[in-house]
Length: 412
Picture 1 (cartoon, one colour):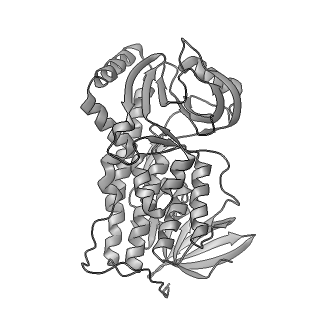
Picture 2 (cartoon, helix red, strand yellow):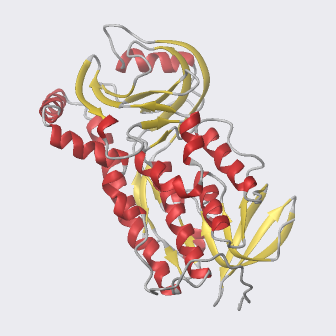
Picture 3 (cartoon, helix red, strand yellow):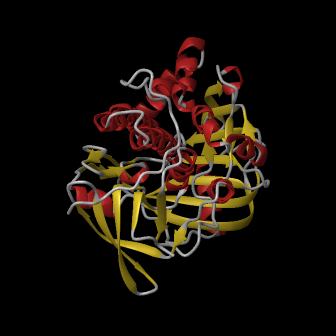
């Protein structure tokens, strides 16, 4: 049953909202998680977790299980059909997790949900947030469950509710940016793949971009640009993408299509991450091209940072003024990720022969420069943004963290 009041109301139970719930549980903070979907995803969606994210998730007690279920890949290659333009080796990254971890989003959500259950928590599904009204000491949120309206009062409300965030709209936070032209295809397939299950391959061609990445169950994730993709791309559509963009010397063969979808891609960044008692994170705060596999990773780190920060403030370890640290740390990180994904996408969408030759030449030169390749690997892995993934020491020296449950009164 949904309570009438709580310290923190989390709207959205994707990976970001689930990770925030774990952090709040560990801080002893009373909170409620709601999601409009009756059940979690049964498709893979996001499929990669990077080194910095695995490190950041360690305190939540889920990293080991994720690594156990995922597929570790050392190599990330950018190719133009049969030609390798640049090859990045992640095995030398300065991390306990020197690899790209391929794991479907539904498995990531399963691990996070099981951790919440192990901490005594629950996710309230089939609950849609309709209205958020901010008051002096918190907010009133109108939700609908089984056709019935209910108001939940919370000291803080966090929007982990995606690009069309109700919380962001209620806070009046701008979401600057625009949509990419055309559409993207996302699919999981069984594949006879000439490059084998050893690398994430980002392939350029005059026809556009295709990314091919192996998944733990032996299938492959396909992400590709298309001017106008069908709503549910079929086997023939995926085969055509690989025929026109994949290796030509030894072509790929699609054996079976597990699932597919079409989606539009935006690159947008929230003007602020906090407005009073309202916060946004994950896709509610930043969206961008899937190139580089950064989206879910950025949101998961948002969740860990905000969860620790809210726990510290509610438990009296930090003053409320330090809640601004969340935006100070995480918005610049998202800005950097949006720029990185944009550069990768821009390179992939080069169509004129002259610009393709120039792009390939530059990448070939970079491939002979180990220090530049290391910088790129650090950016892709998130390790270059490590300082944006952790809180500084509290401005209240000597105050020890402790899990304290507090009651509060909401003043409208």
